Image (cartoon, rainbow, N blue to C red; front, side):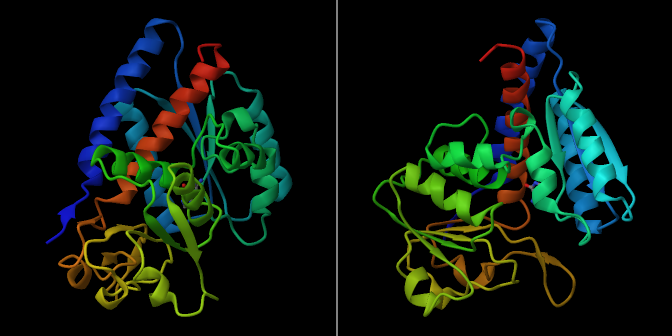
Length: 284
Ligand code: GUN
């Protein structure tokens, strides 16, 4: 039986710390503000944005939402980013991805001022992460690291296998595990004999986006299993990339979906927004 990595509980702990910091900053005359941009009406994005705004409010961070119609042009979106870059009351800018297909995500990320890039998606911040010298950490991977730290799970020397190579999760996750001296393998859709890799993992991170992709036969006994998936099963119910019922008895630790990685992503976003406010006010 695995121990559950309770993202809700750990994130509540982090959010309390953030709240105390936001209060202390307010006393110094430094309010903390986040701008959230959402384009179109993707229901999953709407849910994520609502959760982020709610978490901001609970932590005392002022958030302003820019909900743009799906037909928004690249020029209009870039003009908004430019305005927010210059707005002193906005410490962090988050543009919820994915954007509608006609918009150029890379150009939008590149337009966000690196010092306000609380997602850590800008090439400058990605570069900082590569060399281990950063202000902002990417929200989902950093949230996972925080959770591993909270449960005293050692990474040094461990075989860490990340399934998925996205810029949002897979690649930065691998970098953070490497920084903590893990021996890291990144697997993806072209990997041959994926199960041979995953069965070797002491720490397995699944970020594939396919419901129940990781089954018990792919997991080593005693592994730590982290599920980044936010998928829908055949009945439309929220589930992860890991077949929880099958894998849980074999793992030493496992994250549930929901209540695992998701809440940690939001906690890191709040931390990054506070960091941005401090940096912009010469407090770091
Ligand atoms: N879409 C899925 N995850 C994320 C995230 O962490 N940040 C943003 N901006 N968009 C996302």
